[in-house]
Length: 256
Image (tube, rainbow, N blue to C red; front, side):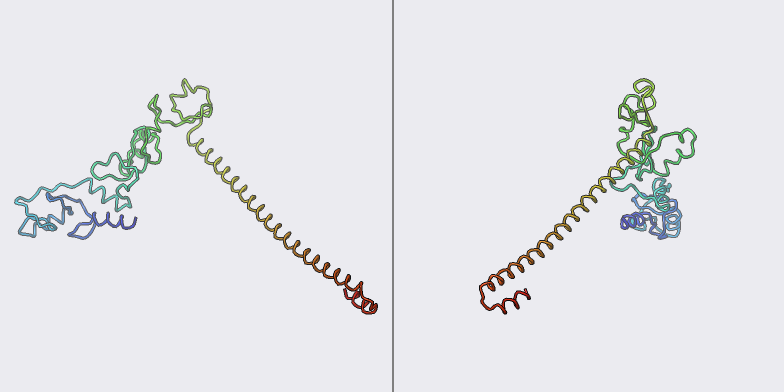
């Protein structure tokens, strides 16, 4: 991402002043310069040629500001950048596309920061429904009434527009799509947390079972050792029961 931004910045730098373009102009060979920079260069030179490719022009070209390029440069200065792969492009940008900041359900279009400005200043446009930029805007428009789907019908479990509530969904339980979405997010979060709790419980049970099995194995091992020791003593006592040395029998049996 950093290298991409750096490449864009380089493309917006004038090769004469080594700074961002100011009033960029495109000369006939296709190269761009600041209007003042190329004008001064030609004024001080005996030839009217491109400083980069050295192409000569018999007549000094008329210079006109490349407004699209100027918007791009100004956007880059403000931290904006041309549309990235996979991003939604601004429909109002003509030559150089920039990434959309919002999509308007009423205009059925997506706009960058510059072209979205009227929606923040014009009273009528301020009432338009803006959402995060999406490509498939038709999915957010009612196919029957061609109006934004701004409500969710809980009775029929579907998104509807305001016109839908006049007839087909009249007296139905409808809420703003934002409210339904937020509630579902909360429910999904609760379900996720409950699933996590069950996983933790199962893990604890497995750990307890493992610990119990380990403890049982240790106890069985101890009991087996005791049994082995008792069997050894019993064998020795049987052997002593056959001896006629009564004093030795008493001495050994006491030690056992």
